[in-house]
Length: 227
Image (cartoon, rainbow, N blue to C red; front, side):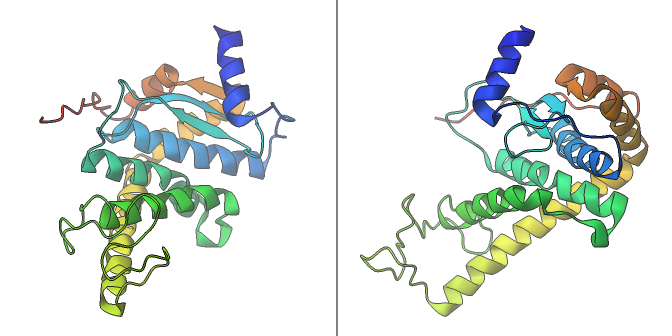
């Protein structure tokens, strides 16, 4: 199973790199990854953590894997918000532990994913409380409302501004939630970071057992669509 697990990691993330030298950089990466895993563990609608590792692969210096508990043909609003919050967990941990002056570029891909998910909630899935059940873009990015056949965004200024405001509101609310969870569980975060730095890899069960020593870990909910 260890060889299979390693093969999956290699296919998805790339070849294993040179182990990180213990120091400030390794500790910062550990806090970043634990931030992701903490949110994924404490938010009920989030996919469960499979593994947290500080072993570099590809371009990533550390990785946190999440595995859905079942096939997901449909994704609920609560699941999307959970994923946004979880993706912001790394930046939230950097912010809380090291301060904004020590924030790194490590959250670059996370922020791209967060922005994309939040925008799709607003423009494709009708999940905005402000704009309501409107589909403003299709999957290819063509605009439905006030659009052109060229595929170039041609929102009216007022609609564009409202979209931006809703996207920002979703991201800011999720980021505040992520920071609050890191702050409220600082002792658990510090403890699991120390263990992760020593062992370099924790599987999901190990991670949840450590967190459960300090706070209640919710059982993951299963989304049952209404047909």
